[in-house]
Image (cartoon, rainbow, N blue to C red; front, side, top):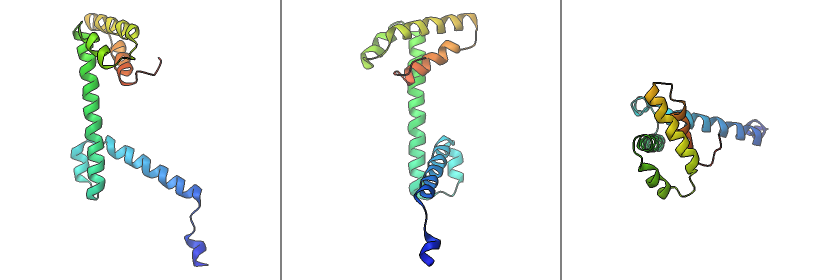
Length: 125
């Protein structure tokens, strides 16, 4: 009878794993300073801080590419050589529209779309 009280169904286990994944995703989104205030086990802290730092570094690389593409006509050639499958026509259009938005002081719609295309090159608008 004691075994019956300890039994956990596969559905319950799956639910618990999903909840832990959500918690991990939320932890990764926290700033490093906030993570340091939490009483996390050392291995968990290292894993979360490492993922968080990697995500921030990736974000910075993407933002750098976006700024280079908008600000420098030769950047598209460099980007294309590093990303052979890139949709150059879509990039050119978004770069042109982003430059126009900046010049006219409009909201950064094309700039955001350009960022999304750089981040997810296989996604279609």
